[in-house]
Length: 463
Ligand code: ADP
Ligand code: MG
Image: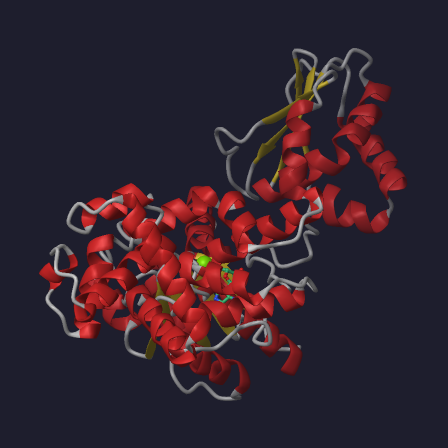
């Protein structure tokens, strides 16, 4: 100890520790405060060290005030208390100081959020979302392989394919399936240790371990894992150190016959900035892709979600949403929530019209995908007429009806105005378009076959 301790000495420190032990109890003391080491008193600041950053945050968050108050019993004019990280047998790690001043609550509060999880819960993995179970997952053509493979991994006692690699676009259910695997395993065999985390978090933990020269502890965390799931591995592309570590962890676990589940937005071979050997390693188990949703799947998901929320939503509205929100399931769920919230707040019933108003922005951004030209092309193909007939002045029924259908579809699928649609159909007047829309709506009402034909076309255009 240095000499500028304002009278605070070894004996005081011993007494201070005894006081703290009395205040917080033996268990908490042994868990958290025992590893506290007194460093110095300088400029009315008393400094302590702890061996890890995690411990520092925990102590700061939960015990700083108690420690400070006790210190005041020994050093009257104490203004601040400082904690630095100093691994056992190592030096103080630069940049790890956390200082709490007498008047300073703000910084402490910012830490509360992070340190609030119980330290005994596995710090390494992330918690599983209770909504993401197999029961809540709607299966359709686009995701049936991924679903079946995930179930297999969760149900079977031995490792059949390793790793299971799930890939697909944003919001198509990758994370949902991984959590579902986790829940199922926990339910079936509570003793098996399941770790789920994002590749980002994996990277963060690894970088942190590197910084505190604690990579052995990092590796240790994996030793006892039965199933490791890492979400969104595209995040480690280009991060060479992390890839290296990931690769080793991966190999070690595979060699010990532990199950690994990986997700990404691309197939292993398409992952840019990932080392070749890691790519081939990732692809050596089962690679299951999730395709973009179809109309049927979207409708199925919406029906399920509406049921779960216990709200009555007209099937017309659900169909409308399934047609119009094609980007991903997350967005569709968001749309449903907004509709329900709006209806509850305003006290109106949910109709296609309110959906159009409430979800204007969402519908717009989903619109860009389908153009009037595409509609014209699909309709022309369907009725076996020439594309140019969409713009031609010909009025024979064999081309006029398909043209009207294309106009109707343009109106119901895109957000183009009547005059805009008219222009795309050989410069026709908006009243012509309006007439076409009315006519087709009538026919749909009258003739079920016709109605089904139109629905089929909608789906064709949509896919
Ligand atoms: P990803 O990880 O692929 O980006 P998520 O798993 O986070 O997508 O899914 C986004 C949202 O959509 C979640 O709320 C999820 O529950 C829901 N979801 C996606 N696919 C389905 C499905 N087939 N059945 C039910 N819900 C789904
Ligand atoms: Mg995800």
